Image (cartoon, rainbow, N blue to C red):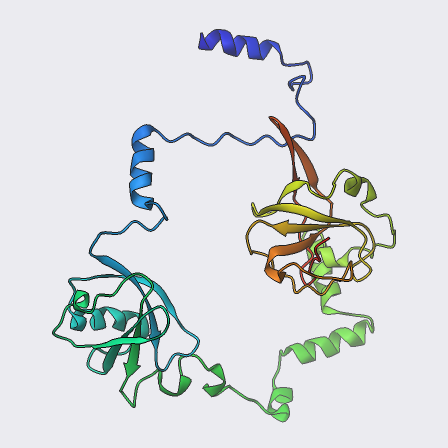
Length: 318
């Protein structure tokens, strides 16, 4: 039966080597392998209902530190049968505070102190539950974390050199630049890089391309995209098209605004297409319509935007 199906499918292939119903613009992706019954059972057991399968005697606790103001350890798995002294030794690998200098306090999810933990008692004695927090108080005055030394880089002494000493050095970038400017007053590092790439047979950087002056740039590609379309951008991030049009603050041409399903955007919301900007900066991205590829799927049409995002601009809700 399988041979008959293969032969039947092969007979439908046209002379050009493609199926008659296949769109030239369609991107074919291999089907995802279906898990066997045993594999699915193992996966469900490992993930659990919320993706955090753990034993009944295991608790997930957050950890904070008296000297670390910017560092916060999330959901460290600890066994309720562990003695507090052992817990301190385990936490030493996370924050560097020795068990001898560590005073440990247990807080609830509201930030209220539940108890100070004693070394000879088990963790379960204090009845912690998922979401509670262990707070480490470092009593060592010579601790590496004291005074912000593990977080504040401004405390680290930087190497400095005087202008006279730098000018006396040979083979510096400053002297290299001076020599190049004597040869060509319009020389720049970017032109130097492009020249070396051309010599090596490589394409110049994208920044060296000519500036776009056409107001209708990408208009044809943008006409196939409509507000409300579902899309997937480079990197597998999915979302919904919220805007298609021109942006005065961006380079000339047409742009597509996408609201992601998850907060993975990096824009600051500075582009004001409309008078309001209601989207979270982490939810949106402005994209060029270049590389938009239609995927015909059973029952629906899905659009995939493979263009690189234009970083630095946000998207208003329309």
